[in-house]
Length: 262
Image (cartoon, rainbow, N blue to C red; front, side, top):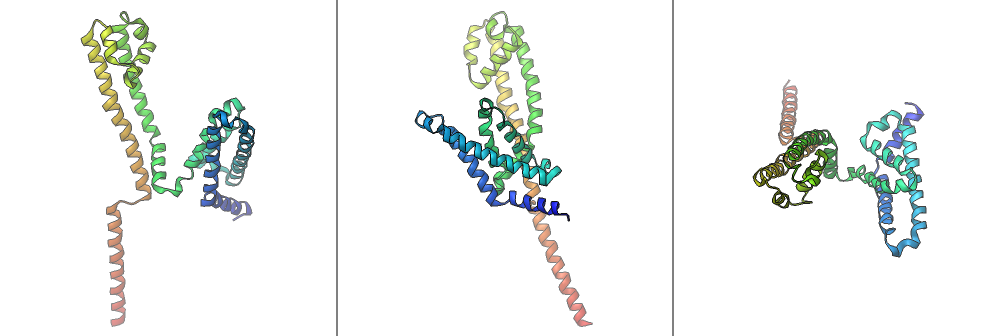
């Protein structure tokens, strides 16, 4: 093993140590607290101090990232938490007017430290692994949502042109109906085709409330269970391993008895 490989191994152990996790958590919480306090008029006089501390913490994060990339090389980007940290720090280096928007994204550093809480880490990892499934659910829901928008435009566009005059307006109105921004009862009262509008909105609410939500929950739960199975064997598997260990011990005892008899 070369000197660089030994340094990389030592650096990886250090960055994954509990001490480093607590340091990162402390710095991220400090950033969050200062960002919140700076919004209050009473703390406006401390803004320069907050900005100085923020720059120091950002410099520490940049140095940490550079050391990781240099020592770990290609292995650095194999961890999705490292990729997330890299993106967050890169966004934080942008001009102040934009960086302030992404400042709180550094709280994702806390996520990379959740190995201290295995159960919580499983949930977070499950959410990350559920993203492809959630993306598929989003695509399906957008297709069905677009279908409802087309029907709404065709049926109600002439009656309520401000809400259903175009497909875009229809999608926006339906989104407000689903999220509770506007009552579907109020809209149906403004339409002459009460029966058709009530059926349409009821179908949309039924689709979102049950079908879509069930798909999203199912995708997340399935991903979390898959992650937990990687780290925690099933009860049946554990029992089988215990039985095999017991059989192996019994075989050793039998072999010992046979040797003594010989």
